[in-house]
Amino acid sequence: MHPFPLAGAIGLAVFLVVRRKRLGRVVLALGVLAVVGLALWGTGVVEPPSLTTLIEDVGKRLGKWTYLLVGALAFLETGAFVGLVAPGETAVLIGGVVAGQGEISITLLIGIVWACAVAGDVTSYVLGRKLGRGFLVRHGPRLKITEERLRYVEDFFDRRGGVTILIGRFIGLVRAIAPFIAGASRMELRKFIPYDVLGAGLWATLFCLLGYFFWQSLDRVEAFIGRGAAAFTGLVAVGLAVWFIRKLRRDQEFRAKVQRRLDGNPMYRRVRKPLFFVADHATFALELSTLLALAAVGAYLFFVLGMLIGPEPTAPFDDEAFDVLGSFYTDPVGDVIRVLTHVGSYPVTGVIVIATATWAARHGRAREGIALVVAHVLLFAAVHIAKDAEGRPRPSDQLSDTEGLAYPSGHSAYAIAWVACAVVMARGGHHWSTRFAIVTIAIVIAAAVGATRIYLRAHYLSDVIGGFALATAIYALCGVVALVIGTVRNTEGR
Figure: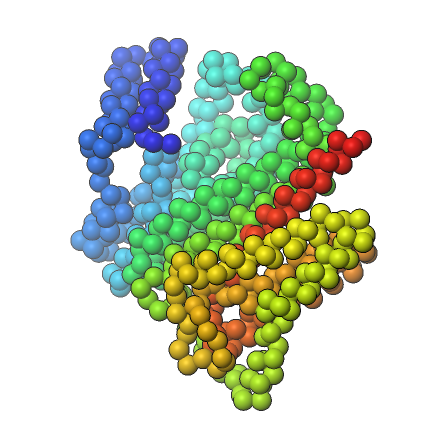
């Protein structure tokens, strides 16, 4: 969304809330100023300063005072709700950058950020405990927060609040408000503290070390963090959706309540049928969400690795992978590997796909077989299109006869066909141990093919992972299409 319409929406909300709550002219004036500022920013009249550039410059000037700056921002993010307008991980990341430049100690920085983050969370929790519930009880009805809903939130935090605090630490908006809500909903402090300490520690360590190890590529790392946070948020949303669907299917009281609310709002009536359709087809919903998650993660990894491959000849850990596998190289083993690597070639995997598709058709699952064949054809095209678009040359000193460009690895991508075929066969009604064995063997084969490409220096590690990711995304998307078509047709035929 562009900032200008966002500013208008925020302005309208501020105006309505202030009018309804009658908080006074001062608050209204502040709201108007905020809207004007957002409007100027959205139209490009005023450009706000870059937080990254500002903190990096201040870090170089302050030296060891960076401890205080980063620690204060880590505290204020939740202690004063600064995280609602500024991402706290940026400040922590810059602290790691300063440590990477040798100005401060990374160990001490992690400890300070950890302690300040916990202190900010506890402050927010106490504020929620003292003010939150009373405020919600007094003003909640105006925002449609009834006593019943408040009790439901309190019960939720009592049952699953710990996991929410832990996972929410890595989601910007949730991180800023979760401690306050935990306090307002009367979550016990003895339950809040352990999860908060663990989450804050993991968060502080991760972002400090990212800045510390990748400080020379700060702008790219920060961009990946933003995309990674979005991807993680998406996965959390998928998980919540799965939980909601399962509850809708199993809890008849909850189902009736949802149906009443949907029927009571004309805008939402049209979503009732597809929502309950998904709920009544639990296996379909689980398989669909799994395939969509695989497609999302695969596409994300493929494009992120493509962005990491820049002017430098190698991406992170490419050289290390060559060193590790190269230490085991001998001519006799190399001769064997040159034969085994063809297990991931397009002709060999094509035979496997056709054989599996034929087997699936004979067992009344023709759509799955067609999806395999279509995915394998699309993958061949996607690999060559991606190679031409990226234009990455092969590694030097190759130990095999290879031609063409490097990213992504075709053999690695085609080797995922083994896994896809194994999944199709495993869905044929075998015992769970047999299914597990079939899929595991296929995964080992695909991983071995990827390792042979690095062993022979035909591809970098990033090429291999990129091939795996691209193939996973394409096979998963074709699986989604086949699953949806099959489920809809089966439903219509009843």
